[in-house]
Length: 267
Image (cartoon, rainbow, N blue to C red; front, side, top):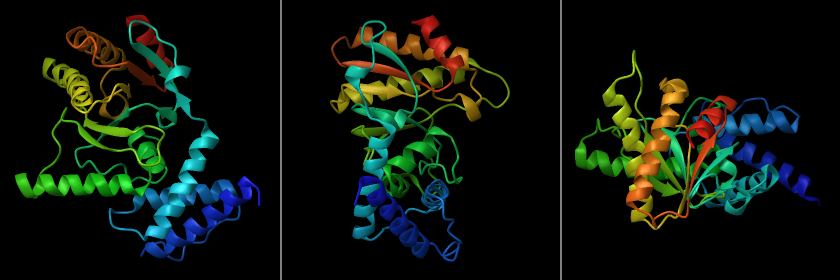
């Protein structure tokens, strides 16, 4: 059986397993096309609450997602050119990067995005890491709620480190960026800078030598893209001067052409 057939069989078996795992969508009609099946599987994964899954299903999911990573193409550190010092810009899907850590723009609940097929980075990272990522985030948050109370939510700019599971990266660093409700303020700018500084501190503490930052707080968090890029570049450059040997590479991962232009300007 060729690899495409193997992967399609994995997809079919996973769909059946995730259907059986779901109370609400147990009897959903599965379409015939492979692309449609992939969308259904991703959606079932996206909406699934954190809970244990059978070991054989996890093993099958891991095999499926690792093959998905190969299909998308793994991008190694040596594939990414250095722009200045140890800084790089890379445009594309952050879930393809084989680095020590990728940064996830998380929400205060820290469990990922539950909107089926949403295009946010939180959804993408959780999808391609696998359901173990949500489970680990949940377990870490439960420990914090035991300590700080059941209403605890992750504060802005306080990063959380997890495994990356089926991503090419080794770890994921989840950080909640500031939300611009009406207008940009010095406090919000400081909080964004703290996201970058605290994440780099966490990398240094854990021996993570390469990290890819997403564009924290832009998009639905409404931080102006150009100002966000300037704060990111200035903060990372300042931190690097203070810790000259701590990081082998710091990557600014962008998705939009607009952000790429801003980072190129400031670097």
